[in-house]
Amino acid sequence: MEPPLEGRTARKHREIVAAATAAFVDNGYDGTSMDEIAASAGVSKQTVYKHFTDKESLFSEIVLATTGRATGIVQLVTESLADTDDLARDLGRLARQFVTVLMDPQVLRLRRLVISSAARFPELGRTWYAQGFERALAAMASAFADLDARGVLHADDPELAADHFVGLLLWIPINKAMFTGDDDYGASADLDRYADAAVAAFLRAYGRR
Amino acid sequence: MEPPLEGRTARKHREIVAAATAAFVDNGYDGTSMDEIAASAGVSKQTVYKHFTDKESLFSEIVLATTGRATGIVQLVTESLADTDDLARDLGRLARQFVTVLMDPQVLRLRRLVISSAARFPELGRTWYAQGFERALAAMASAFADLDARGVLHADDPELAADHFVGLLLWIPINKAMFTGDDDYGASADLDRYADAAVAAFLRAYGRR
Image (cartoon, rainbow over all chains, first blue to last red):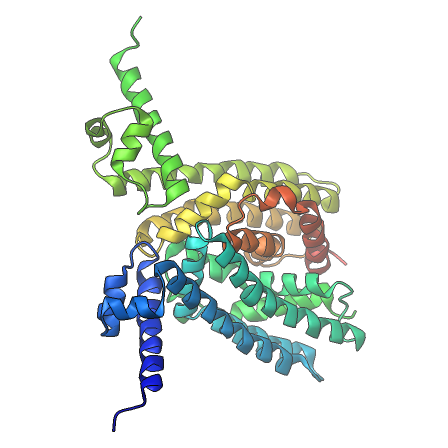
């Protein structure tokens, strides 16, 4: 039985998005053509243009769709820290999961793609930063504010505490992957060590004495 | 009087390098052609090829030349922290200067360029990371090791302390500029506030109690 027309259209849309995501992440904006996307999605170029006016709007949709990942991080932060009765343990678990998610090869490639195209598409970059990066930070700040109110953490500026937590955790592994192009660095690096060291320093700086 | 031949060759080399640097930083690797570089340097394309075998080797020379900037940072770190008798004050000055240098628009554009091309030229990325990024970190680690030996700082793992100092300082402003494409962000942001907050947190984490 043939699927209904709407189902086919939606499926083609999904297939184009999947093919375009892979192409942009692997080859960048300039290195990707609508022809290649059409071929890789198994549709005609005309079909691609029926779904997306041009390459830029396809690119924009794809990049912004990835901010959905931030929702998972927000949940992870909230579940890890709400009602914690052992902050060092739960912050440690959160740090290990957080660095693992951010060092995923696909996430690293996406990060490089957004950075690479930010100068050309600043509006897209700003939206991605607000809906992705800053949303995850805001969830962390909110959790730290609660912990401060409970007297577990000393964070009278919770946004700053969130900035510092993430900076301690990610500065080195993320930059190492970004600059050296080694998107599999997370698999070989001792990410747990980065996480544990960041949590220890953070608790010295922000823990209750 | 005509300058000697060697002088002219060296000058042309410098002019090609300057034109190519500006073109690559502004338009990326793919967006730059040898024709444009020749035109902007005011030489023939043949002359460009006499100095550089191909676009890739020209790009490589230009990117690696910028690791010379790390020398200035190494000096800044050494001069700021050697013989300090007021660590909070001198670390604060270092942090303010360091974030200002790293947030310079040209340095941000160069950072984006290296990150953008790292997946394609990983060897170049690795060399840049080792000669630039890691050299500055090593200078900081060495200064922290001295301060630990003098009993001024508590940093039994000075490399880790250096990672943490820089991560506290730079994670937010650098990422904000990278993702939003706002390379002038340093001019509008309160960088001193980032610096002072990072130093305060660092000293809580690593200062002698």
